[in-house]
Every structure is written in structure tokens, then in C-alpha cells.
Length: 241
Image (cartoon, rainbow, N blue to C red; front, side, top):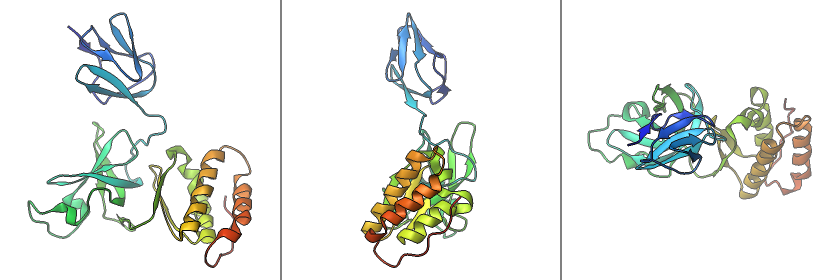
């Protein structure tokens, strides 16, 4: 007989005992020592039948109340929409938080948002069980149209945005692209295809070099070096901090 020592979807640290006995089998992120299954890394416990594995948290977004994020619709229920938010946890947008319009029971919700749609939303609640509730009520919160989506490391988001939005504003001014950076590391970019590519390149450069001093000057130099590739009128580059 085996015992599960932690709850499914609980966060564990390396070396923590997860289960005892031979009823459970170690999978990704875990190992067996005698009759005990132990975590080999930081992660979220995922129990699938007899298998126990860990979903790595490194690089994933930890939801926080009032964060503005970009999510992707992955399921539609009777009560709303389920989103993938670059996290170990999914998120829910309920009917009353999606629109002030009356929606009759049993209506086809895909007429509003459907599978694969990306929305800018705000987290208004995270429960103790890590259930994440979203809302579309607020300025700038909406369904996104055509554009490029890229994923960056959530801990690099502050550097991509810059002080008071200065870094992302510099990229927007230079490339003439619309850019929205979600706190969860999901970035939406819309502009001329060539300009979108340059925007992605510079964002990746910020992500890779965020820890090195002199970042602003290197980004300005990069944009100047690529100015001949920009389609459309280029604005003056503003100083970023």
C-alpha cells in the first residue's frame, strides 16, 4: 500500500518526499530511493494514475492579483472560457467578467471568444487552491487581432517594458509596431512583417542581455543598425532607462 505525502498540484522542492510505498511510480522530475519517491527539482506535483511527475516552475509565470496578462483560449465551458497563461495553472474568464451584455444560458460562447483567441486580461483573484480568475473589465482589456505572439521569460518582463514603459516605447516608436507585453511573459506584436521581425529580434536581445550593464545603449545601437530595414516613417528614438 502506498501513501501520497503531498497534494496533487502542490509545489515541492528538491529532496522533498512525495510518496511512499510501491503503488506509485516515479516519472519526470522525481526518483525512487528505497520505497520513497523524492523530488529532484522544484516543481508542481502532477499525479496521473500511478505515475508521479513534476511540472517545472522555472521560467513559468506565477499568477498575481491585478497583473495584466495575455492569455490564449484553450477551452470553452457553459460558464466561460479557460485560458493558458504561460503558467503551471490555467485561468478562467467567467461570463459576468467578460461582458456586460446579457448572455442566455446555453448560448454558443464561441461567438464571443473561441479556441486559439488571445486576450489581454487582468487577474482579479487567485485562490488558495491556485484557481485564477480573469476579467475584461478595465481600460485596454480586450481580444487581440492578428499579430505575432512570442513568449519571454516572465522575470525579464520589467526590463523589456523599461522604467515607466520607456524601453518598449522606444521599440514601438522605432519599428512602428503595436506591442503589448503581458506580465506573464506573453508578448503581442502587430505591424509590417519586416518590422515585426525586428521587434522580435530586439526583444530577444533584451531578454538575453537583461543582466548586463549598458543595455539601453546596446538596444539603441541595434535599432540604429537595423533602421534601413524598417518599413514606414521612423520616429526619433527616445531615451530608455
